[in-house]
Length: 348
Image (cartoon, rainbow, N blue to C red; front, top):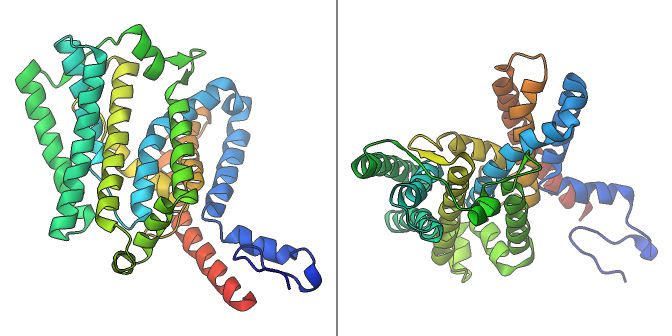
């Protein structure tokens, strides 16, 4: 008798799985829709813009955008898989950026002190978010909107009180500039490599460790997960702190790249990161998604965001395409999941 696995059912007489079975396994993958979306967008802009879109400068334009959004989108994706959401990242990015710039650029402290303090801001906001969600029982959407506005107000008030301005310049030293704020070949931000490394680490944790199984279980049914012995409260704290820490890292990187920090520096990340996650195959209801899909969704979003400028299209059409992608992604994600479930029931 041949053993049966969830993704590769057995075939009579020990033969190879039928092609239909392989197709069913492919459809069950969370990133299937994001792969199709990425290919469609890449072909569209390659045809519409010609060789410039696939030139090194073209790749750099959307990879640089994808890297910054991607570092934020990955922990946002984990939270959404777990059934939570964090909108405070849009306030954490400028808060961390200004913390680093004020300490190092205005007061002249060593970069390591500014980096530690800025990361501490992000981790602290994440911990507060988790504590409020766990203690109040309110939806994380409401809680993180509240903390977002609170952090925005504190950032503005403290920046003006300490420096008399809403922006601060900072010139990092050669080491930290090379590590977090330089352009390789004059085009590719070093942040791209931080993003890819982060994706590999989180991808391993989500898909090959009990930590990942707990996240999926929380997104499926938090009460059942807790009753099954999964440490849902500590896991919630870790996920929110990861989100805050990742946003803070992006804020520090931006300060080093642009050698300045501003109060209004991160609002676009709030919805852009969520769009990347949804385009990447993560269900809004939780319990379904993958890191690979989030990365592909981020690249797709960045291609549309930047690729529109390489064509003769009206730049305003970029928002139309992104909106259509988001709607299509939601429909495809749910459709693929339903097809996979019905396929399993029929063939099982």
